[in-house]
Image (cartoon, rainbow, N blue to C red):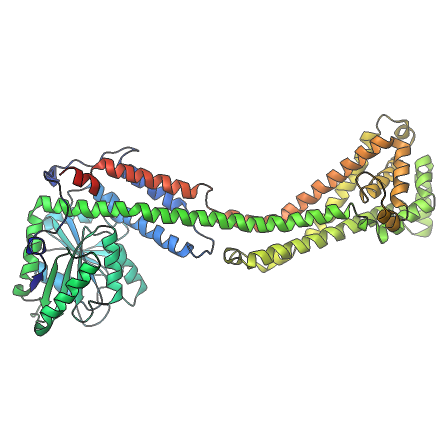
Length: 606
């Protein structure tokens, strides 16, 4: 095997920034605790990430959910446990493409068959972690990669971590044989990425046939972005092509700003009866790791560089999450506004219906003309006897009294209007959501129509309003001789006149349209009311009745709108979710600089 690149960095310890006088890693005090400490800031960031959701189907949502899960895994798997034990053994995660020879290489470096290797792909089912027996306690306790179940036996469970000890591996160093980064099994690929994010050092294994594949380079660029320490192994290189292929790979590494990564070239060779490579082939790489294991300062430098790189990469990643959270809020607000606009339009239609005389057409007009034209209104206002007379007439003819028919007609006309505007509003809101990618995912076909019980609720609302008008008449006329000398039926008749007046204009000044439509309906109602209450009282009475009706209509339509709004309310993140993520990331960045881990602080200490 040969190495390529600057001998001072390629064949020695990894090229990383280090203090001129680094403390002994074994004596290094743990990070400070408290809200201002780096672990405390990271814990706060994790809580902020976990509390933010991205349920609306926006282009940024899937990426945000993936990023949030990856950051949470990295915080749990690596950053928090590593900060708690900066002197813990260095974890080398061995990653690469299918069939690159990762397991064979790990077995050869530790001089024991600890990880299954074979021609069937994918070979590695669960990750295998091998360490010196003296380091086993640290990995067994589960602080690092806590989501993986520890086992001492091989397992097909990808969420199990197979722990193996190998006396030939120097203390202070551990290898983790990860699943293939391009595995045909989705879970294997996801786990490989998760494990690489928990590495102090990446040992990337590729082959002469596959070193230019896209997938490994995507991960290598990710590692470069977060400042991880990387070493490369180019495996199975034909002797006659060694220089050419190694030179090309070196150029590719330099182009990706990875030129300082040590590169080890393994020629095509045989394996022994245990499936191990000849020691002469692996000796340069084994010696490199031995020197790293023996050098406390070098190990500490690797840990600090990777740790600081991972911390520095948090801020832009969290900023993307915050932007996605803001987009969720903006989308929810936009969806809500489409619904509110639809139902505001419905309210305006009802309000216009109370002003332009349309509610005085048809049955209401006919019943009012009958009520007034037969003299029934005035007779029922004159004496209590009118109530008894109407009961007798109704019993003989089988027909309800004119007052009852008028009241029913008013109720029917209002309910018909409410059903119409509610149907139009539901259709408008449904269409508006269907045209929005986030809204389409929240829709249910039932939302395209009003609630099934809307007619019953509308009828109850109108009857409640009618009773409210009668109560208003009683209260407004409470000190007048009219109420004192008439029965409840007289109050009912007066209330009907108020309802008819409300169906016209607010000020009871009949327009040509009202006169043509109502044939003097408004004038007749106004005359009756003014005779009882006076002009100003009439205006006040009708305004109150109209306001009460519109308030009840608004409540009814708000309940219809809530069928939509409740869905966005469930999906909506907290109003300050984005800002909360930014604040949490800012606290981490501040704590990072205070901790002395940041690259800027490293340079400043030289």
